[in-house]
Length: 223
Ligand code: AMP
Image 1 (cartoon, protein in one colour):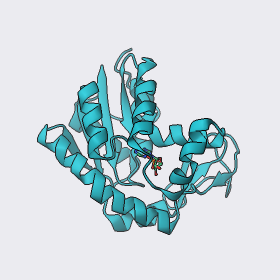
Image 2 (cartoon, rainbow, N blue to C red):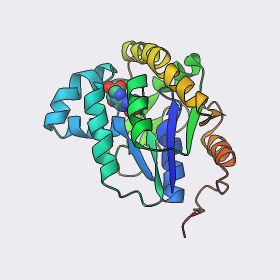
Image 3 (cartoon, protein in one colour):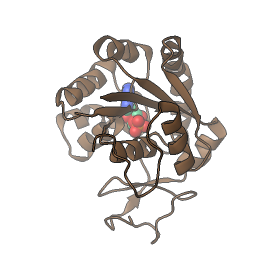
Image 4 (cartoon, rainbow, N blue to C red):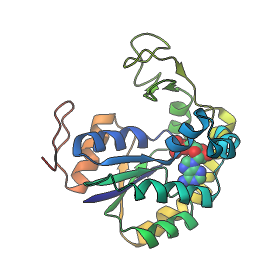
């Protein structure tokens, strides 16, 4: 059983790196932001409560976030473990998490703010399947269309310069202290997120003592 937290500023590649790790190693990828976006898209009661905050890039209240995390982890579909992405984002969330779950490592993707701005403003998302694109590093074959399902590519509502500035402020003000808290418990491994996807993935695996990354050939831990 492997339980990891992946942290890093917006655009540092948390979602992509978590997905690569999970697909290959049979871990469950838990993205709190994706859960909220699903609720917004499907017009649920929770979606109505968080819609404005998510669109503005503001943090959702801790109670709602903790409920989502608790419910998700209670599904116990993570026989081989999980990678949780986008949580915890402040100290109370970190304390809640550490009280309830033991974790094996915190992967911190390190990216300078300048590079964050460049990447985030080029980010696109498939409106149908949620696949991530980037107009700098991962362009779709046909402009504006998802390579996987043909869905329309859209900009996330919170990938605007204003929302990004707010998220960077929140990140440094509220999430940096979480990293310090984890560091005191010696959980944190810092990986340079400026490299390409495969290099970053390989660095994560080396640091966690996991099988090497080979694109397209799963190195299943549990086979
Ligand atoms: P993300 O996809 O991780 O960037 O999250 C998108 C949005 O979901 C954030 O801007 C917040 O509005 C909300 N959100 C996701 N995770 C959290 C969290 N741990 N605490 C508060 N709000 C969150």
